[in-house]
Image (cartoon, helix red, strand yellow):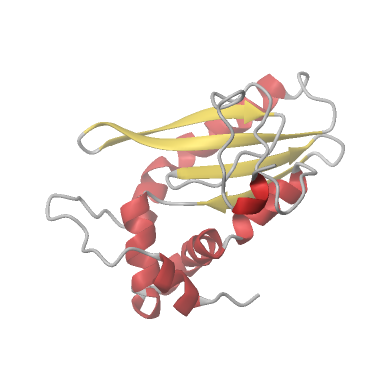
Length: 177
């Protein structure tokens, strides 16, 4: 696969990361949580396997409860969630007994930093960089829509979403009829 770095860099706002932002290497956060995180992910699969019939998705949110204390929160979904920074999405196929990482995105400031400095990213973070570039190019959103059986140009929301029933958003003149 190839990613359009120049397009991603044009989409990104041209701002510096704030002075007070703590930039912890993603590999450091991942290593600290990996052992407990993997077990919690597998526990989430086990707890939800009977609630779904074929495929389900697990959204993993990374949050800092206290300075330097990171926690992952696991939420199962029938539909593939939309890609947003600071989330990872796994797909579990019940028939195949297979768990796949679809994508993992760091916090927004890290996404911006990685995309703007793609040529300086360490090899250990290239996989993460590929997710970031796919996010900015729209490929992750296309994948989510495809997995949900949505049209590529749809703006449909998952039933039960907080935004369901919200006022229609007009994106172009052809949306007004």
